[in-house]
Length: 255
Image (cartoon, rainbow, N blue to C red; front, top):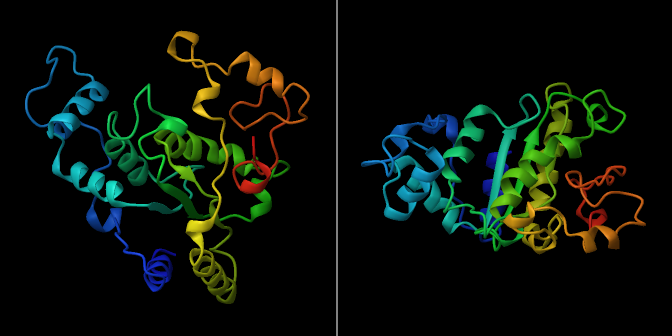
């Protein structure tokens, strides 16, 4: 999938940067070593606070800085991975934790739709070892929209990314080689016009109260949707049924 994406994007004029985390032996573990120099508060080390200060002052470790430079250059970021235990593999989750530090990727005044990466697009392209039926509302694994919420909203959208519909390759271990080739061809075809795709819609940052209001959905916004059958998103469902395919098909998730 990674090789197919590189070829398809380059064919259409994109410049492609790749971070092969396993090949790089990327360090997935947050540690004091991520912060160069003396901490701001040696007696009470707070990684989040120290990382933000180090980012501002150019004191983050070299491997973090190199990955942040790639993100800064990117118009589109594709996360290619096998779905492990309903999430990213540990090495990719660790990449997000270390690279998307406060200040660089988010802070309280500028996050979600107002996040630093609001002019960039991102998408998840992942494979699974189970049939797609298992990740439906009736399936034993539960709705894929619930599974994806922590990644697509909690990581990507929180940092401001315009999140595109995920590329899901189900059951890859158990299908024919012909079917796997078909998956690659479909992926390559999608990438020909990827920049023209509309992003998944989330509730805008402005529709929530600020810190003094607990970042709760504004009453007038909630009241305006009182007659809707479904909640607006998986995360803010307001006690109503979850919106169908809200994080898989962008066309049915408008607000």
